[in-house]
Image 1 (cartoon, rainbow, N blue to C red):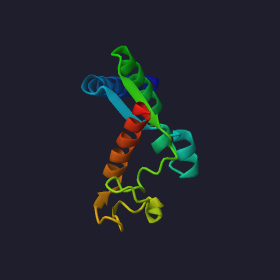
Image 2: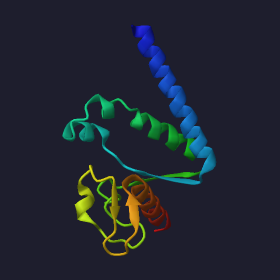
Image 3: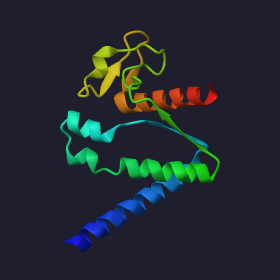
Length: 133
């Protein structure tokens, strides 16, 4: 059983190394949300599905690979309302705080948003503002 766990661990590390290398080679600046995965697993009752996902290992690999190439990893504050803010007009829609809402229309500008895509755009934009500040 220990050999199986070691094999799975090595496969995960290999995958994370390859993905982080691909991203580090492709971008000069990478913006990520500074997530507290342990707190998320406790508060949202995700258990092992969140705590065992390798996020910390991935961000460590990504950070050092970007630094090796003179590139930047920017961490956006976990309290930044990335999924609630319209990436087009900046309207903050508190109704979208509910994680079950996967898509929403901005009541101010009418733009239709996928929650995750909108959050990614907002994290990128906020990260670039932090870099240029």
